[in-house]
Length: 182
Image (cartoon, rainbow, N blue to C red; front, side, top):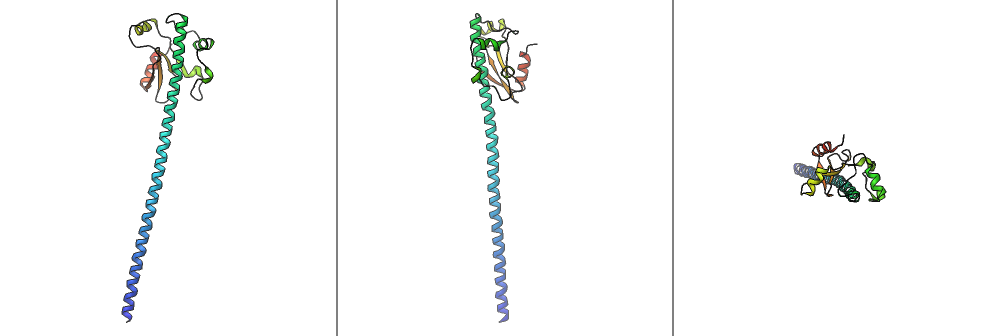
């Protein structure tokens, strides 16, 4: 009889041990699943933060491009006011000319954070041959470009017809280098 009790006791111990192992494995599995769920949530949060940062950068680009377009439009009004196609010369204070004629409202004008208007946007007087070529159906010359330090991956340029173009680096830097006035 003792051997039967001993056998039952051993069987019970084996069953308890097996259940304990299963329970432990179950707990480990549950813990692993919870870890994975939390890790996925962290990854989703990180991806959301990256997407939000990217969207914010694009919004700044769009606002900055719009402001550059407003400047180009004001310059075209000024050119018509000065005589057909006469844009300000390189030695003229083009921003002061726009302010004097109230061609744009600087208070509602977007300038990228930490930048002055005169340093954010640069004016390039179009040459008479470039204007003549444009009038004959050619490409409009660039009259405004953003400072290359505003965005890391490129910048906006605005043509005399007020078309805004985003150009990626390094092409933007090459374009700006060709436009700069000595």
